[in-house]
Length: 193
Image (cartoon, rainbow, N blue to C red; front, side, top):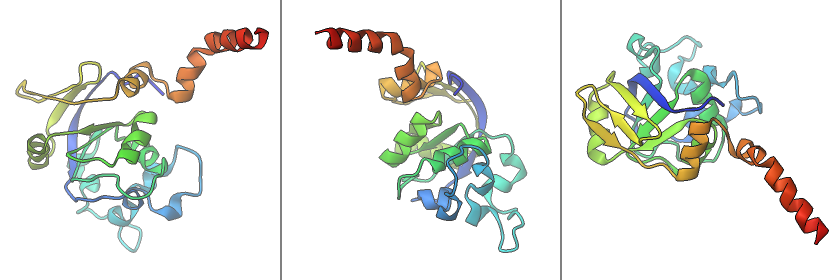
C-alpha cells in the first residue's frame, strides 16, 4: 500500500441506504483472492443492464462521476456479510474514500485495513454532501479533517492505529514486519530464560 496522507477529489453520490456488501460486490464474484480486477464487478447488478451494457443512469456510470475518488453513500453503508472483496472492489475501481453517516463496523474495519478511508460524518455533514454531488473535497488524514471548497471543515475520527497504518502505507502485517528485529530479540530473550 502507498501512504495515504491527503486526497483531493470530487465526490460522486450514491444516496441509497443500507447498501450491503453483496450489493457492493455480488457473491458470484468472490471466486478470487486477488485484489485486482474486482472493480469491473463493483455494484454489478446496478451498473449493468441485463444485456451487459452499462446503465447510463447509474451514478458511477455518469460522465460527471469519472475520476471521482470519493464516494458519498447513503446511511448504513457496507452492512451485511463480512468480505474484504468489497473494499478491494471499491479500491480497484478507483474509489479511495467512502463517506456516510453510518458505516457498518466490519466493513469499516476491512476498508481501513486495506487502505480505503471510511469516514463517518454527522447527519448534517452527510446531508450536505448528499445534496451537493460533485463537490471537490480535500481530505487530510493526519489532521482528521475534510476541507470544503469555501474553506469550511468537517472533522472525522479515526482509530489511532488505523490512522498510523494509512499514513505509513502499511497493513497490520506490514506493521508487524517493521518491528521484526524487536520481535526476534524478545523471542530470543524468552528462549534464553
